Image (tube, rainbow, N blue to C red):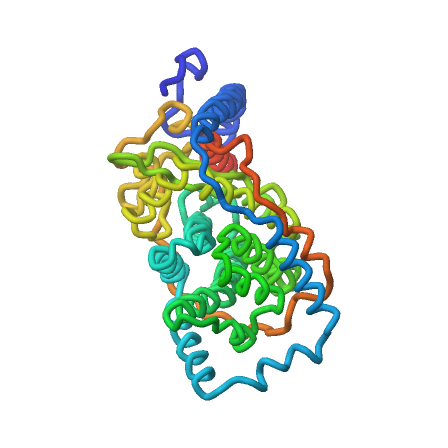
Length: 429
């Protein structure tokens, strides 16, 4: 995608000062705006193609009402009811519980191992739609973590800010896994034994909210209702433990660093679609209000409807997941723009200029996106509070059928986000 030469200054100095770089950025601003508008229009055109062939999610409104009623009844019974399951646990129950906790600990070492574990669960039990959604979202968490060590963010966020944002992202990813993975394993064990084991959910400190969903799923295998339940549960699970936690509010969400991180185009959840020899397009959504619990739940449901309700998205994302091991580097899905090899990365001071001039970057001039374990390694986390987040009927508001958004393809929007980050890097350099 070569730009017309008249869009650029005639004489680009080889060694630019900070003032010269600022002038270059301002000169290119109109081109950047035009590019963003063009990208949005192209994404809407491609989105209509993705929506052509739909798959039924099998939403059952009667089951949803039944589950809501059971949760309301649990709330009416109160705290005294919560301990009844524990009094009935047998030695075999406790042995199974400990086995699942050990398996969760082994698989939860890092974002890389968690992401792989989700996919393995989905491959073993394709009715567990949430496991595949979690796999794809967990890939995005890894990419967001490595962005902090990549060339685009090197001068946008200071080191303390990078570490705080990393801890925020890593803890969210780790906590969701710690809560959800035992549930997935418990279902697999129930299927193996041919009998429900969901009385053990409390063994893993899973909220009372989830048991009606699992019991209903055991009866009718309604994947959509279970997925919505898990989306609501996991977002509530991290709400007080991370999003509203005083430490992360003080050091992350209320800091300018975090807003720069979002404004730089790193707030997109993408679903790479593999067709033939490579990734042909990116489905996904942009996170507009990560601090809002209802907004995160709505985002999760929208991503789910897109991932499992559109044939092209489901098949393309699954092909990508199976073919490309997760490393945390954005080179996993976009090797024509990113590289995990720092020695082959772009060293030019103006990254935005390179991206404005071409669709891809040649070898030796690509943006640095390290592998996750090279960037951060494994990160042990502090003890986690175990109290039940379910306090009232407010969570029932999210129990509704997921719907597919109009804008599904964000290939060009994502590239525009990469460009914004590169321009932010240029301005800070």
